[in-house]
Length: 91
Image 1 (tube, rainbow, N blue to C red):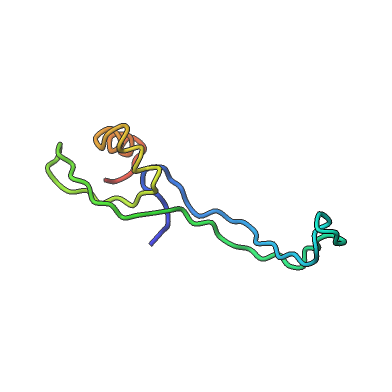
Image 2 (cartoon, rainbow, N blue to C red; image 1 turned 180 degrees about the horizontal axis):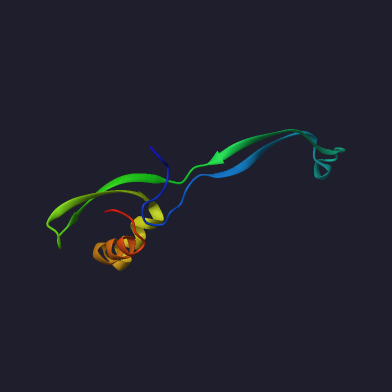
């Protein structure tokens, strides 16, 4: 199952986790040294949400990020579905 938001298109991003050793100069040390860098993923905050689509009298299940839920609250479900279909997404 892919981790992509149906509305906004948000997906996982790559990043790095940095490990440091030493005492900061601010704390009267000689400074911090980077001793290791490992790759990590930043995952979007996704939920599976079921909406009643009154125009077609059926339920629609979408995988949404929290910002997409706020977009649906603001614009309305019908407008969001119309935009998704205009982009060629199956709803």
